[in-house]
Image 1 (cartoon, rainbow, N blue to C red):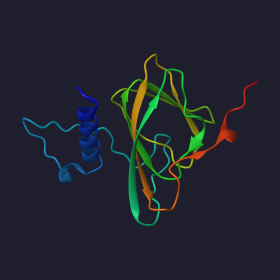
Image 2 (image 1 turned 90 degrees about the horizontal axis):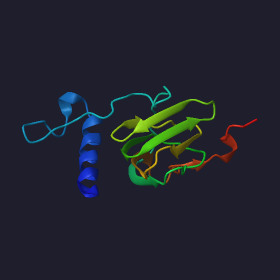
Image 3 (image 1 turned 30 degrees about the horizontal axis):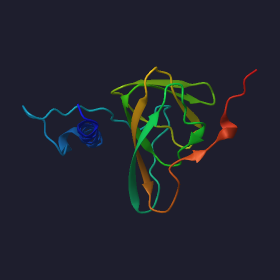
Image 4 (image 1 turned 135 degrees about the horizontal axis):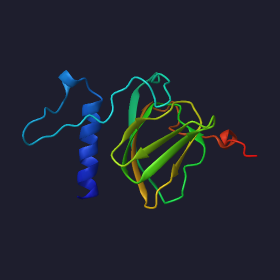
Length: 152
């Protein structure tokens, strides 16, 4: 299956998951399968999702991380949602809380909370992330090296 086909399938699935079931843009049929990947009002750590003020702007990125690689500590001032296409991702918070994602799983990322993503698998990781920001208001991600947990 080509990456383009997978990306298009993920986009359709994410769009379907963001709409109420009765208002889906794509109706399931014998030739169209719609699978809800995520429907939530909170990020994975339980904090409510709140959208920024201003003109809405959605950005989508493909993030690829080599085995053993990590994003480094950062936070997102805007809501973001991801779907892991390939690999195994461990997301850690400074308080020690962790979330493990495997290929095909989706998550609502933490907002304004420092975290680090790490490829804990043996193969490259591919993650598509959608950021719900506003035009010229805030960056999508802010480095937070100060949030790294202290080791004894």
